[in-house]
Image (cartoon, rainbow, N blue to C red):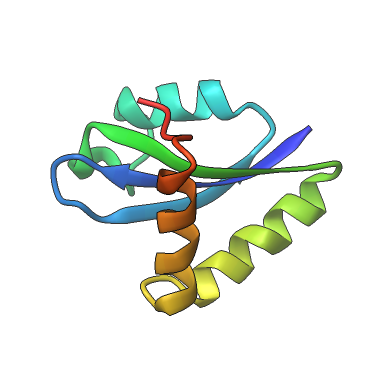
Length: 89
């Protein structure tokens, strides 16, 4: 399984979009400061994830989410996920 995901920084309130094959390990690595681009926003919470069969599908979805980041589609995606109570802390 592969995942496209959105993280939210507790410190800055900013979002990070990525993809991975192990979402729990990836979140751990982000929160351990092992990713240069997310190090300053610690800690991070997972606010959205989607599952895919292939790495390519997950990466395509990551790019699609990034293409409308901070726009209305992005806000709807995050709000929908929060409303369903799927936030992982």
